[in-house]
Each structure stands twice: as structure tokens, then as C-alpha cells.
Image 1: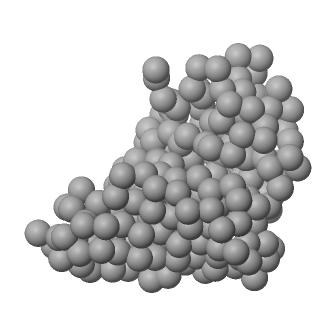
Image 2: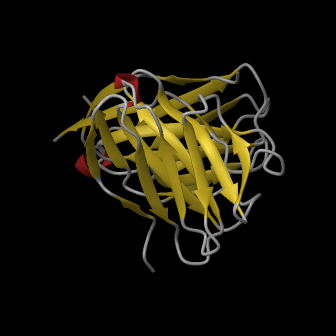
Length: 113
Length: 114
């Protein structure tokens, strides 16, 4: 059974650009959550998607957005990139809302220069 | 917002020793999760706890859900070199309204000397 797949693994962008990251959950999993991991702030919740709808949102500015498709795959977008957006972005999938056990992908390492 | 205080921040131990780490919070959590993260990888779920007082084992790992619902503990017995990594605790308040939203501790970095 394939795990959570995140693409790309590494990305370098320039300040002001925008970026789209992709997450394919484990087959059959319908809930997808996104986290930002930085040395200073640790793991912070960005948002959760279920049935193509954002169900929960963390304390991040509106530049951070996401969506989920009918096959449960999810994308997150960051517009007008800032240096502080450099981080490891992790996607986690779980069977359904209310199922607490989440499985993480390897993450996308975003560097903003 | 909710915060988890995880300690110790780092540990340097000899192979074969037992390890203990814990997480505390000023607010109540209804689910506690423990993850391990290796360099360049995402966190991997080790143990999930759902009831206050619950004690759960996974091989050499044992975790407990504190009675007050404000803390959790992870013990690793007879450590081996592959236990090296960063261990995170995570709490969830209400899985119905906040499903998928975990609050994470800052992690405990474990180094095991052969």
C-alpha cells in the first residue's frame, strides 16, 4: 500500500513568487491536513480538507490556501512568497474526519531566496 | 492558543539505557499521539492514546495518557542506535470539531551512543 506522496520534494523560489505543492493521500483516505515545520516554530497546523471542503484552518495569513479534489488529492498554494515561508511543508492523511491517526508524507522542502 | 511543553529538549544516552520523555499542557486534550521523525522524512505515528489513564505499548515503546488529560509520557526501553531521531508529542482537543488539527510539542532529540 503506497504511503502519502508529496511533490515536489525540494523547491527553490524567489521572494514574491507563488508556489503550489501537491499531496496524494493513502488510497482510501479522505481527510488531508497540511503542516508547516520550521526550526523556530516547530510543527504548525495550516488547514484540513475533507470532501473537497476546508474544515479547519490554522493561524496563517490568507496567502496560504489550499484545495482538495474529488479523488482526495490536495494542493496548497502560497502566494507572494516571503523569506520566512522557507520551511518543510508536510501533508498528513487519515481515513476520515474523526479518525485521529494521521500518516505523514516526506514533505516538500521550500526555500525562498 | 494551545501549547505543549515537551521535555527534555534533547537526550544523549548509551545504547541499552531506558529513555523517558513527557509532554504537558495547560489545557485538556482528549487524544494524545506520539510520533518519531527521522532526518528528511515526515513524522511516523508510534502510539495513539484515547482515554485518560490509558497505558499503551508498541514493542519497546510505552506511552501513557495522564489522568488529568493535560500530560502524556513516552518511555523507550533498552534503546538501540536506530532509536535516534526526534520524538514529538501531539494533542487533539475534540476529534469531531477539530479533526486533523493536532497541536505539536517542540520535540525531543534523542542521540544513542553505541
